[in-house]
Length: 161
Image 1 (cartoon, rainbow, N blue to C red):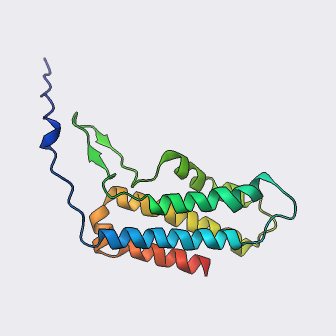
Image 2 (image 1 turned 120 degrees about the vertical axis):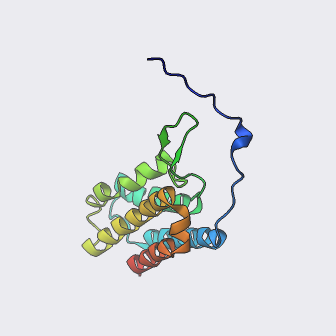
């Protein structure tokens, strides 16, 4: 049996992106929630002695949270490539930022100067941020129109309260 592949259509076959109703407001709310979470993390007690984890919590993590929430992209969603292969979207979360956020549960264990409550709140914030990006990658319209995304930011605010 011989398989023949259809040629890919020209790039202009792709319809122009049309923003979802409420997209601009939802992304602005995400960026604001990220700034609040980053400010809260920066306000936590510092390590009694300089340490890599202390520096990471003070600088890298808040910057990663701000970058993640300000860089969410509804166009970077799950899709089919021209060859018919499924491509996982990232919701705008680049690999470096994602890896820093995924590292949080391991890192906070070494932040012994923080209370267990503070540690779990940091983990919750990082989880919610990565979850929001995944939610947008899987179904951006539903995440916005049903309020799922805004509920995630309410949970972030609860975690940092």
